[in-house]
Length: 186
Image (tube, rainbow, N blue to C red):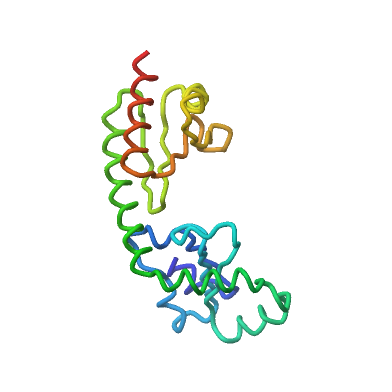
């Protein structure tokens, strides 16, 4: 990313929607060094406020001036603003949830890797895992019958045979592991 920032003189946008779950730091600390950098973050993922559709952009003053000229004047409604402000008072609770998700992600990854038929788990710094797995489409349909919703990514280029599995709570993850194991053993 730094090579691009140093050699490309247009605007470089980095989507940090999942930064709260990442072991890497935000690039927002680099804004002073790179005036062409825009960082996008959201309250949809770690904060659980997807329905509000609230995010933020961090950039140089020059870029923000341009963005403010083209955005609608009241682009966030009052109710959403109030809910966001109330949620921001719960930083400790959100940080605890993030830590639990990161721990569960690691545990879920280990459990999945122990199942015969799980071919690969791609590295993740998000609240989900992308898993290449035998009979992904049939497994997806089977999991639906068990009340478990994952995303079948088999039709996405380079994701053939993959399921996108959101990290759940320990009981949810245990149920998922049991059902995947049961399906793949048959």
